[in-house]
Image (tube, rainbow, N blue to C red; front, side):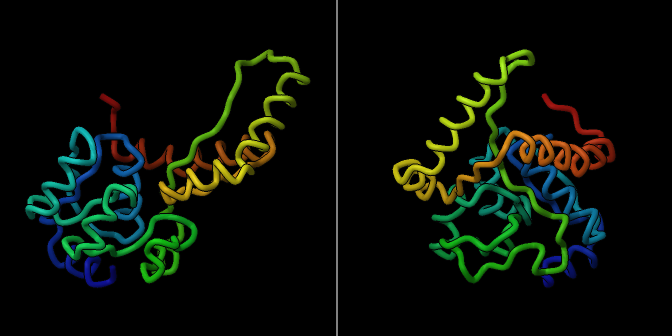
Length: 185
């Protein structure tokens, strides 16, 4: 990663990065890296990760932020080099690949995450039952095994913790979206 950053700094505006599409977490993750590393790299949006990976392999783009399951076969074969993991922690399938935080870019964390929400006005007892059922499912061995196949980690939390997380994510990504002027298509 340090070599890539140095390469990009020496070639402002000449290094292209692909994403699964404008406004996706893969796009925004690279934009955050661009900002944090102070590099001038050019976004090339694709309609999905597959064509972006194809062009990365073909040399049309020089970098791509994408979910590990999509890239793992090419990384394992040696066709692609993993520079960093844009998650809070290293992942078991690529234990030697450092996180962006380890490399000096702690804000560059672009985990995909999913949450369970309900419409406003749902009675508290119903919300409590939904929460208990969701936490039980997330803690089940069967679901953990399924998550493992996607290199995902279930992370049950309280409704208050989840609300705080969503607000923190909005605070982190809002300025990136505004700065890039990205519009979802």
